[in-house]
Image (tube, rainbow, N blue to C red; front, side, top):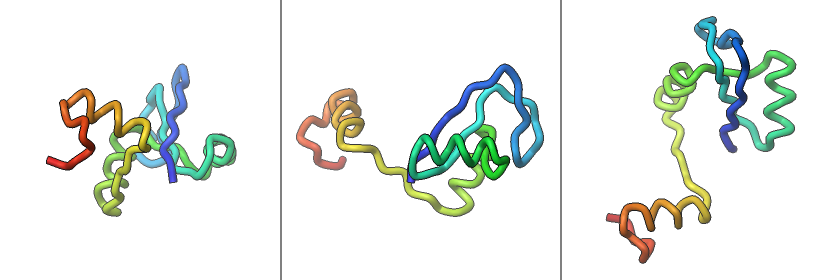
Length: 82
């Protein structure tokens, strides 16, 4: 599952109802995320998405491409965990 971000001029969060400029959706594809957002079945502000991820104990995994970039940034080019 991936997280997708959508930018708006102003929109309400599907959980807390705050007016925000970004909503985040968990889905398998960008197309699915757009459909869920359009149908009103998804779309959380950053705060509510963080609450969901921590309360449900989601684990975040970087793609190999992104992981390589982060390893270079922190000086761990061998790919070993610190």
